[in-house]
Length: 373
Image 1 (cartoon, rainbow, N blue to C red):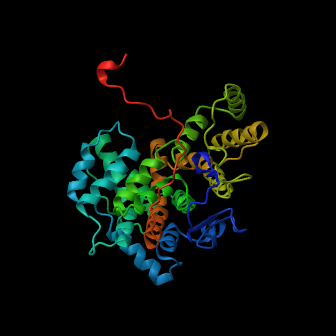
Image 2: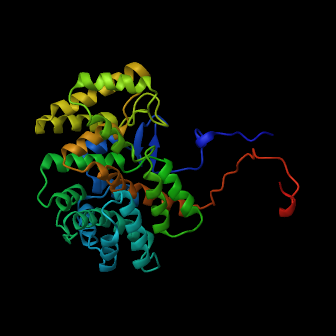
Image 3: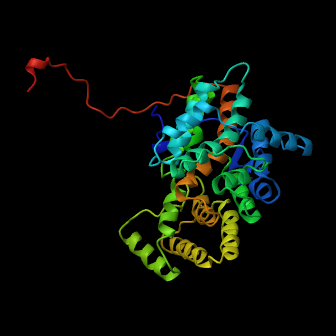
């Protein structure tokens, strides 16, 4: 019997998960049964992370305790700060997080005294500090404190980045974006984490694998590439003309289409509304108009819809976040989903080891080196 093949494993069911639906069973996108629209409108990222990691929405006391716990886990060990200082300023911020995660794993290894749930919370709390400590040290030599009293994860990051209390609209917009990015079933980086976990490797190794996978422009790096295109144009008409020329040259326009969704990305309209609100508040309406015109052209010419990355790019830009930090924000959010998947994989583990069809040469006789031409 011929074994079915699927390049890129498209359409292959590789396991089971109770964490999220992606257009399945009539639920659209949901996290543990809660619709993404409801979470983005009514919840906070900390509630969402708790839901993914601990299986249910917290009550008020549990949420307050969890937020305090994360605040208490933000301080970086001295050894990690020294390593971050050695990473050159020319490095990509994703490389900083990958190195920081691996380094922290050597200093605070997973153990009976430091179980997987504690490691997950520690990484969630520490990633914003890792990135901003490196950023400020390499930019102007400042050794910032990575501890703030902001209980909101988004507000904590924005305060570390800008050194001041963030605007409420910016804080909430980033908070919503973290909810949207938190989890997405067996995407490439999550699957990478599960493969690593399936070998019974440690928690940090699984997350490091996921960060390396997310770094690629066909996965998390798409938001950076999308903004590089958006930022080139001063008007919607200029954007339309240039996009038409790019399409004629068969260039790929990042931020459109999706491997799983066929009609629309249910997260896109949510972040698009925030991008419009931010642009209007900042007097940057043209940035939104350019983005919207690109969306219209891509729909008209290629029947492609924007994914979450497209409008999150301009939203992050208006919040004063450097373009090279767009994908690291993805890490800040998705580490909650990765961690939940690692735990789920471990709970019913089976080594993930697919097969491949061999298409190389037929068996050949070995030729001694002195007889080779």
